[in-house]
Image 1 (tube, rainbow, N blue to C red):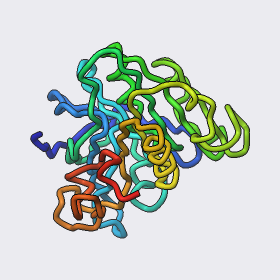
Image 2: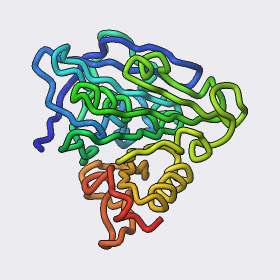
Image 3: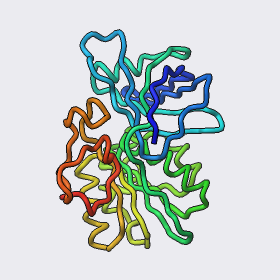
Image 4: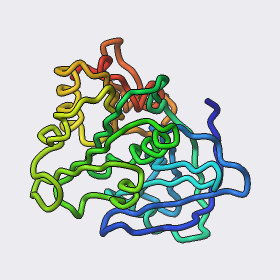
Length: 255
């Protein structure tokens, strides 16, 4: 898929809590097609301490409205600058990058989407795509507490959503792999979130012979496979998460 370097216009900035914002961007020209699970590299300007772009998962892409969205969690100077953007600001973006989720090619399959905290970001675009394809799916999202669950009403508008929180403030108390939803039958699993959570989901998938894809969140710098800082040791040797992933079948991962 062709990559584009474009100056996008910030359409809106919605603060979801103290550390997370939803950035919506658009352009006068049609935005390049993006698949669920891909990401973009956003250039950070006016911040002398930040040299590199910031890789951010594509939260959703609306071709008809010509809007692309990113869920940004503030963890340092770069993401703090991104969260400070205002409506009308311009930002240079390289996209779409990486390989996204594999979409079902046959009818009658039931999918499970498992996310953790802000790691659930790319699953929103995936859920939208599955709904448009009339695919049966359920969503399971875990977090430390209710305040760490993002865009609940938007996820719930797409289909069935279940929650776990470590403190029991919403949904079932505990971890996603302890949720009663996993007693139901699923034909495919997609997951994104903290690595320990994804490893637990992968273990569950293997034990139940369910194909599963995981979206890795290794540290990235260039997004083009040049710097090699995001390399993952797989069953087929070392692979760059930014170009060979970020989505991998768990059969490739040494978890």
